[in-house]
Image (tube, rainbow, N blue to C red; front, side):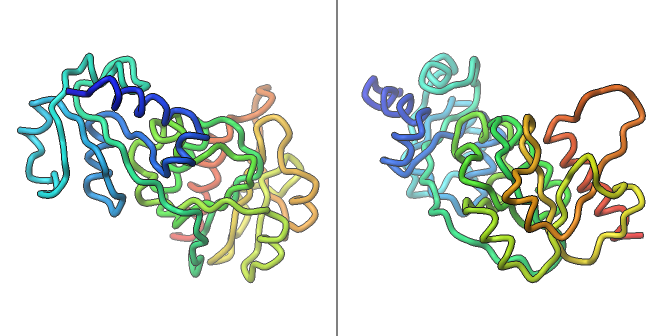
Length: 247
């Protein structure tokens, strides 16, 4: 069972200051916990229903300490309303740059909704994007809402937080920003390698980042909607990159 002390500790990891202090975060639900078990992340604690343990005993590392817990206990300790599978406390990774050698990477400039960040991570995974560069205003990767929305894709898509203007100036590959005044993404011929910048839902790309872009692209509107959700827009652009690059 999950003791009161451990449940209190798990609850504390919903807050960024405690995640930073403990260098740990929480993963909930059968699918996401299985993704972590198959990844190179270090799980420090695992709580699971008897059904989860019996069904997935083959992927639980021999040296990993785990305890049985009821669905109610898992839900009470975590942030999910219901959890009939498992909950894991996982060691967070340091904020480390990653090498971008081919294909396209995504740059996020001020995306402020954790659910959108998780969705964009999942989109990057779907389209085979190696990673994401994020401004320091973007939500913490290990925020529970980010982890939940990413559905395990955070184990494969690297995210690095850094000041964007300096990062972009140092790039050898072109950097294209999503902007209402840009070139039509449906006809734009993407080079083999580059970056796509997605701005915040409310304000778009910041002036500091806009000043160092190679150029701009846009998703044309055929109706009357004011804007697109950042995750939806990212998916449309990634799909056009893949479609054009594989023609």
